[in-house]
View: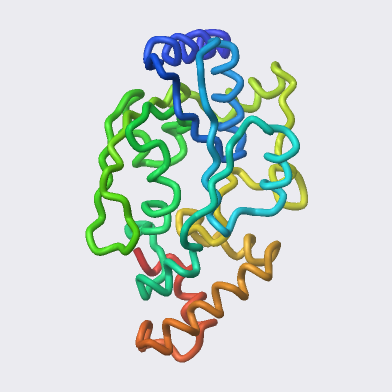
Length: 246
């Protein structure tokens, strides 16, 4: 399928699923969010764009968003990732991503949400449909809103990595410097995100202040009894990044 075909299909998806009140657009500053932002303009649909700050967003990404996407509304979290770790008394893992539940996933409750999710990014995302309904519930988390039902639209689900960058080139889109040397990120997300696996060592090399913030938080929860089988915060951090946890 050519890029032109993919563009046409994605635009038709955006148009056909658009509700009367318009979309809630999830914009995270990365290359895929840029694609759906541009496609929505091409489709001529109504979208109000939103960025959910996490407290561990790369500063280069924040600078890029401010400069190139002034139409995106920013939302600050009611709790930082470090406060959530202290509250849960554990670090987030691939199977216990309470940080995403609390900060990112609650945006757009009651709305039809436009997202730049692609199937090739993970095994789980390969199972996603273009249109989906979501209701998040996580009992026991202080401050977690229970009513988070929403409809999710993923118009570029079947796009490949090369399609995204070819679209950028065709449309003359800028991109965040984290995709370029010396960073060479394939995906941009939260600093220290467990979904990045061992690539987080690169995160902490580039962002040592965030690494220290994680270590300080680990020290706090260790004092409360967490990770009793470890002697130091550095040991916990190494284990966390090793992939031995789920």
